[in-house]
Length: 128
Image (tube, rainbow, N blue to C red; front, side):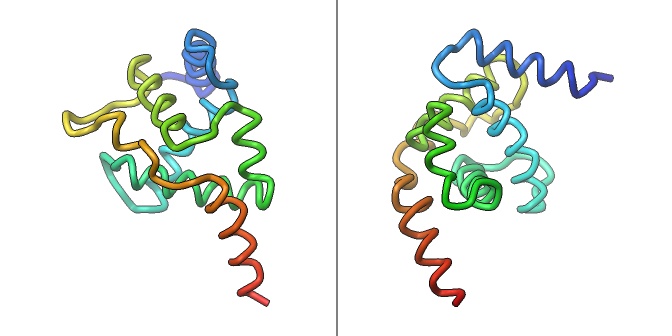
């Protein structure tokens, strides 16, 4: 049985080998896969769109109006960046994939400015 510290070490090593994104970005995506599966009550595979939606919700809840800034600080500016991390985790054998999965699933799915800033503030104002 692998301990959580072993899994995080493996994630950190994959992040270091890639070098494009902070290790916290890799940790966020890695833990977000499991959280997204739980949110969607999925028992196996989730699509790129489902993962991106789950990570959007998690980032908004966890970081509030600072979500875009936090993700940008870690090197994540686009949904393709998230896809790069996902496929890096797959290459490191930390995530599994299906034959239907492709990096293109992560191209331009949503605009960070819109979903983390404009929509966030619109949602907040509609609650009042």
